[in-house]
Length: 102
Image (tube, rainbow, N blue to C red; front, side):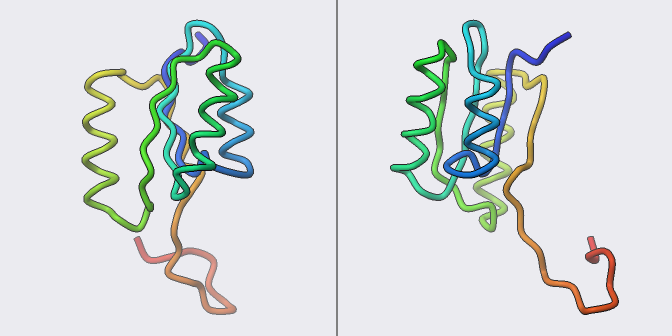
């Protein structure tokens, strides 16, 4: 079953923006998040032009409380089929480390 309701972080540029455009179409609901309100709205406009219903919110993924509130609120309304955590943060890895401490 294809996803009809999606959340995409980092949707204002790069891979996130391309994913939003690729998934956009009639009957698709997209919740897009990114740091840059102007670029985020440009991505949303492109997705809307393809027929998708789009909600946008400018948030920085480093703001954990805002992210949690945004995701919980929208998931209750849209019931996401797919969440793409395209944007993220890292604490940084030393040369011989392969994974971050959760």
